[in-house]
Image 1 (tube, one colour):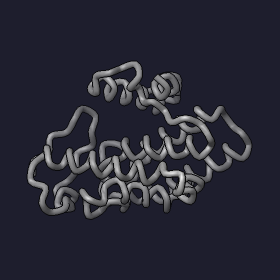
Image 2 (cartoon, rainbow, N blue to C red):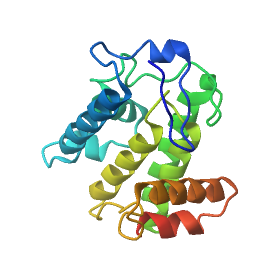
Image 3 (tube, rainbow, N blue to C red):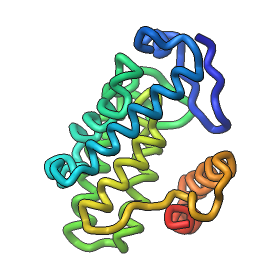
Image 4 (cartoon, rainbow, N blue to C red):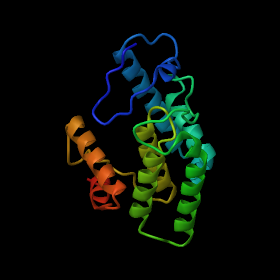
Amino acid sequence: MRLIYPPGATPLDPNEIEGLLPNIGLQSELNARKEDNILRARRWALSPRNRALKSGITSPENLCLLHEKMFEDVWRWAGQFRRTEKNIGVPWLQIATGLFNLCEDVKTQVKHHSYTLDERAARFHHRLVQIHPFSNGNGRHARLATDIFLTSCGAPEFSWGERTFHDPLVVRSRYIESLRAADKGDLKLLMSFVRS
C-alpha cells in the first residue's frame, strides 16, 4: 500500500508498513480502522473503572500499553518502540531513557507543584511528541496520554484547538506550529492552543 501523509506527518519505512495487519488494502480502510481503534481505546482509557492506567499514565509501561490499545487493530508493532530514525524524535536507542526521564520529571513536577497543571500537561505532551517513541500515531497518543493525565488530576481534558479552529487542516497546522515554537523553548502558543 502506498500511503499519503498529511503535512507534518512522519513517514513510515517499508518494514514498518509491512506491520500493517491483514485485510487493510486501501488508505481509506486504514484511516477508518485507526479512527475506530482510537475511539475504543479512548473509551477504555478514560473509563472511571480504569483507575490503574489513569493514576499511572506517567510510566513508560502504561504509555506503551496505551499505544497498543490505540493501534492494536492496525499495526503488529502497536505499543512497541520504533527501531528506525525519523525526521523527528530522539535517536531510537534513546527512547527508553527519554521516556523514563520524562515520566520521572512529571512525577517530580506534580509532587512539588511546579508549574500550573495545564503547563505541566502541555510540557508532558510536548516532550512525549519530541521523544516520538513509536513509528506511527505519536501525536494522537500524546494527546490522549495528556488528557488522561489531566483527568487523573481532576481537570478537564484539553480541547486541542477544536473550539477555535473548526477546519481539521487548520487545527493540524496550528498544532504543529505550536509544537515547533515549544521546540525552541516558547510554550506560549502551545499553552494557548491546548485550551482553544
